[in-house]
Length: 301
Image (cartoon, rainbow, N blue to C red):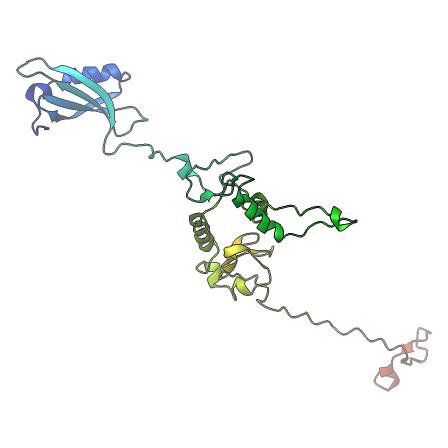
């Protein structure tokens, strides 16, 4: 149990502790004595300030001890420890937790763990029954009955027997011929992520005139996601090419507003059948003949 009062002889061994710290540290990097802390019976740790620029707030900790009924204090250990105001590096985080969307670049590989909760085993073919077993023949016959047989010219006797389908063919058509597929947890996690990015609670959707459910640029997804999500196909929308919630919306909605066509001015009318008469005025001082306009001809000159 740690003693509250440091041992007197160990607490007085400041010079011994400083010499040990100076031997470990670089020259001039051991500062003033801070305090002596009791670690146990006849065990005391002396703390010295660290003057190294890269270790602000750190302290040299030198532990000394003495045996029972002994008068000689011996050195235990010397370490550099952070103080309460020490500058520390951030806590180490595994790369799998540091990775963020957009960090992947060309040539980068992102391995997934074997027990990734977002994935579950798909069709691998390991659980296929033996070819000659009754279970395999019955399953293949059921698939073959639903497929069309190839017909070749000739007698019915030479017609080839229908090829019996296999589990691998059916799995390939259903998109299950993969080692792992998306689990229910992975599906829900993706749906929550898409809803947060392009959902009804976003500022864009709150100010939209209508939702994506009624937009002509929405391309629905397949499967169970079709009921809640689609892909935006409007190049001018902020979510172009992104998976959006049906309750999302933006100002680029296909039915947001019908822009009226600008009015076209009437074409100019040129009447070439009317000729305005011009009268000649008498000669004046200059001896020239001037043309009189219609106003002058009517006596308004």
